[in-house]
Length: 239
Image (cartoon, rainbow, N blue to C red):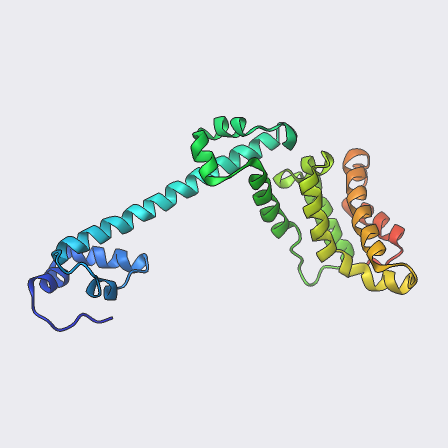
């Protein structure tokens, strides 16, 4: 919005005071427009005072956003660190608070419970874990998932082996959405009389159990070998 051609002290302040250019630039970065200035309701307040107040407010909000992000990150990192030390069920909110060095009220202003931390972890984890490049074959894709678990990235292995109910439910949903469709057509063609819901259950459950066995007892095998075992049991192609 262009500034109207009007000669008055406020306009001269806005156009010629060096500080005002910093203010306007800051407004621009915060998605504030000059139209908000000219359409302001408080016409009784001097324009230069209004400009300064709005600038201070925008800077304060930016700093506040940074503090919120920093606090949430501290809480989340504390949660991840504790997952490296013990099972999820054994972690208490007080331990997260102490490690993150925040107050109890601060914790609950960001997360209503530790379950929401687990939910955030699952969302971040599965978004990365189940990304699939178009050129990957089913075997390579499943080997990628297995490798991710083996490396214990984002603490997925401890959550899997502890049979955390929430984690397993979310994992099953992702497998049903991303893995089952890759083998469904061939399975249905091979077993036309078996209910599709049972085939889906078989694919998902067998993959979770295969992963668990491999991480506990089968580490001498590579992720490619274990994936081949899994696909052979399902009697589907690996290409």
